Every structure is written in structure tokens, then in C-alpha cells.
Image 1: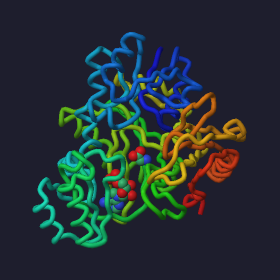
Image 2: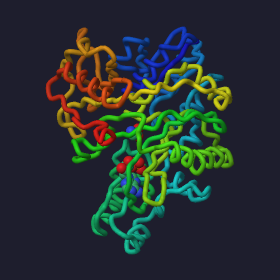
Image 3: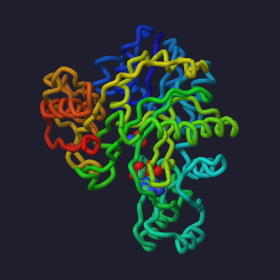
Length: 420
Ligand code: AMP
Ligand code: GLY
């Protein structure tokens, strides 16, 4: 079968790497891809926003399955556009992708179906939101409802701070249309975990739970980023919690989406926080997490293409793909200055000198005259799998140490919390 992956980050590199191992794969394409993906797939220079060109390409090449990586095209309806042309797609419809594309939808949905989440209010008018801030306990969390590339969540210690955040979102439209509504939410405390679920809308298969590291600096300090590293499985989700999340969150989510007429198919990402009173949903994503995918897929010993086809054909419940009993760690190597401004085009060396057992996923790279250069904020995801977490961490950092580029920066403490 010919497969097309849409996207260009570390997540898409990991998806391509795993799909390339499938005996059912005849040919792999990635649009637009990056320098690392080019080593295992034919990169096609079509942007993930060019729906017409993507569907024309998929039809003319006879693509058997299109896998959509990022949330932006999913929320904008790329899966529907491809399905209208008779193509098979791994990824939710526009209606189902609202679960990530609109926090107002997601929160109201959770309330309706009794899914545990932080107490909240949704506001379209500044006057109403400002008034509501008078009744809150602080800190409080203010969120732009729409997609804001992970930047639309502001934790506010005081009412003036929260008022400022609401103003920025609703009145100044700092996040554009994503700020046409604001969610004001109770602040929760606890460990966070990411649960990635392959689903056909009714049946499902949960991948090992993982933990992201969102802050830039060691010890969870500094600004929020797209994610500086991840590891799996995380010990914070034991089998009891896993069962309770499936029962109290996952099953009602799938049933609720179906009842709303928006059957969710593809990868459902459930971001939970483990509070003293039990797990609460922080967010849903309508796609694989990044960088969680780079740590989770190395533990998937089954045929990923087969599993994706099972979600498309409604038979995922009958599948029991093998999961590796070891652990995997992904250390993100970023450009100096990220997540604010950074330079591109820095030559990267040492990519061929990483130890055996290390896989380097490219997140933001390009080829310039045959040389791999930096081309984004997050540049590489250096990933290792080993029998246990400690060995995986050591191996991943040996991989990082083999790599050099000007200004490279990374956290030294990925997964350390889990080793204590
Ligand atoms: P979200 O995009 O909604 O997952 O938010 C991004 C990050 O902000 C989460 O991973 C949490 O670290 C933090 N966050 C979001 N909502 C809350 C909340 N209600 N309480 C505490 N932290 C939160
Ligand atoms: N790692 C968080 C996300 O993918 O949204």
C-alpha cells in the first residue's frame, strides 16, 4: 500500500519511521516532510494547508491511506476533504477535531457527559469574563478557546493578572480568532500524563502513557515550549489509574462524541492531571502528541500501518498489538533562543555518530547543499529505547552528546522525576 503522511515535525518523522517498518507498505510519501524524513520517505513539497494539492496528489498517486499529523489541517477539515474524494484517512473529521480546536466545545462536552475536568466558565464578552473573575479563587487559568500553538494558556496568580490575560485574548485578539472566546478555569495541581489512544470511534487501543516536559529549563523552570522531551511508560499511571481513566474518561468521551454526531476516529490524545481527588482532563488533542509520539512509538512492536487501517475499518477493538516491555526517552534539542526568536541554517554535525539504539527524529531541519541544517525552534528529538528507563535515559544523552550545532540547547533532566 502507498501511504502519505502530512506534516513536517518530529512527530511525523516518528510516524514515518514506524510506518516504514510495515511489511504492508509499498511506498511512503510525506508532505512536506523534512531532512530526516527524506531518509525514509519521498518528500513532496505540498504544504499541509493546501488541501486541493494534497487531495489531487493522493488521488493521482493512488494513496491507500493518508495519515494527518498536525492539528491545524485536521481542525480545518482536511480529513473530510480527502474522504470526499474517496480516500482513506487516519485522522478525525472537522466536527470531531473540535475536541481540540475549541476548548469551549471540549469543556461544555465534558460537562454534558460527566467527564471529570476543572470547573470552568466560557465567555465571549469581556464584561462578563471580567465580572466572573470576581468570584474566582486564585490562581486561575485563562485559556484562549481556539488553536494557539500551545501558547494560549495563562496561569494567573491574581485577579489583575487574569483580567490582563482576558483583555489580551478577547479585546486585543493576541491569538487572533482563537480568542473569540475565553475559558476561565480552576487551577489544578498534580502530575500530568498523556494518553494516546488509537480509536475507530467505538473500539480503542491505548498506547503506553507518557509524560511531556513543557518548560524550557531543568526542574520545570522557564517559559512553556512545545515540549522539551518525553518518556514512556510513565510510572505515574499505574494499572488502576489506567483502568479508571478508560472507564471514566475514554469510554464516555467516545460515546459522547458519537452521540454528538461527531464519531472520533484516529488518535485521541487525553491530557490528564492527577489531582488528590482523582484524574481530571486538562485537554484533548485530536492527534498524536509531539514529542510524546517520539517516545511512545519505539515501544509499539506491532505493525502501525495495520493498526491505522484497523481504525479506518472499524476493527481496532479486535487488535492486540505487541508493546515492548522496556522504556523509551526522547530528548529534544532546540535552537538557542527558542521558544522566542532563534536563528536557522546552522549546520548540524554528528548525526551519524550516535550510539547503536539511538534514533534521531528530525523536528526542524532542512538540507542546504547536501548538509543538514537547523530549520526550526525544536530541531531534533534524540530518542533511545532500552530495557529500563535508566538505561534509556543514559543512552539518549550519549546520543545528544554526539551531536553539535551552534547554539544547541536541551534539558538535562528528561525523565529524571521518574527515576527517583
Ligand atoms: P492545555 O493546552 O489546556 O493542556 O494547557 C497547557 C498546560 O497548561 C498544561 O499541560 C498544564 O501544564 C497547564 N494547565 C492547563 N490547564 C490547567 C489547569 N486547570 N490547572 C493547572 N494547570 C493547567
Ligand atoms: N506535547 C503536547 C502536545 O502535543 O500538544
